[in-house]
Image (cartoon, rainbow, N blue to C red; front, side, top):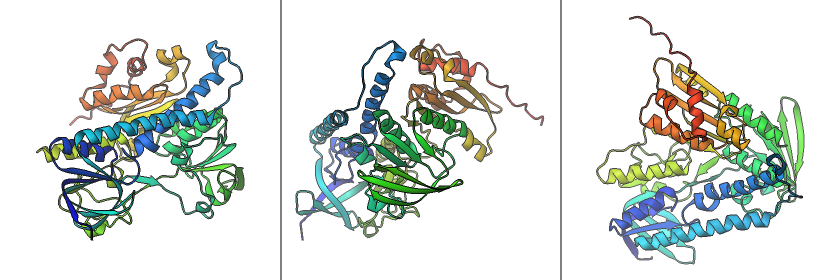
Length: 469
């Protein structure tokens, strides 16, 4: 049996929370090790956030080239070199990985490449990628196990070897016709990018609208935008079965209120959700319990059911965003240093990088109605935002929910060019507890997207009348 190696700090997974915990603890002088089985730095810089935005940017460049005449630019025939798109993405990823490796080295943390499995409390056996095995024991453990794409239990689907976002972002060829299962953030971003590169795209969504968590007017605007770009969208559709092999030829049988339909394509992309990487690694041997969905049970301080073991990021059931995982790291770090931070009542922004972008923070109308919260609504088309007029990108709208009986901002949604930047301004004001009138009366730079907040909030409906006591 291999000799046990002791560390003060043992981190499993080098994703956003895991790597920052590793660097922080090592720099503080603790003997620290992090175990990573595959992606240095986690999914974000390798196969998710940054690579997808890199590829989406290439697709946007293609769109500009195709629409050059609208800007007074004459272009010839435009085509996509997918090998060039891939090489651009890979260059960025390689740079990110090298940067991470340098940071691990500089902090003095031990980066151990292999797959960890718990064999006892605070004890893991690591099957090393280069062969062999090590047994590690930590005084304090931090789990950042991440998540992976789900392949639904649909007849023939697994056998068809469909792409997930990982394979889609590694394409070195242009698919003839991509069928996308799932109308959430991942499916919508990649569907539009592939369409702009030149693929025919059919998107199949089981719900009655794409982006099912969004308000109906947002979903409808997204749908109209996709339809205008030539993307076929099937809603309220159930996949009955799949035949063929993705990358060669596939046939999808779907059913909706119009009956059954067969769709043929060359490639299949599955984007129907994610599941935590918590199975098969011996968590039960360490006294670490899971909830009914398979996520690690944690309290609001991200402590697990095992003493001196914390979990963060996707595997802890946190909203699946890199910026949330980073805040998980801050919660744990500050509490270890005597603080009292929690994950309760965090104001988390959302952004989907379709074109135009969809961004929101706080409540949307759907959530407010579900929770019985009365609100006032201010809404304005992006065509009234002078920045959008100047750039010729006037698709979409912005809207804000305000408390019915006060000037508090409850939530903000922007579907339009540079929406993510506009949301940041609103989020900052909400964090400060400011009334909407501060944004209404602010002097924003002209012409910027944030300037649109002024006219949006200049015509807010009057407060609800206070009932006499």
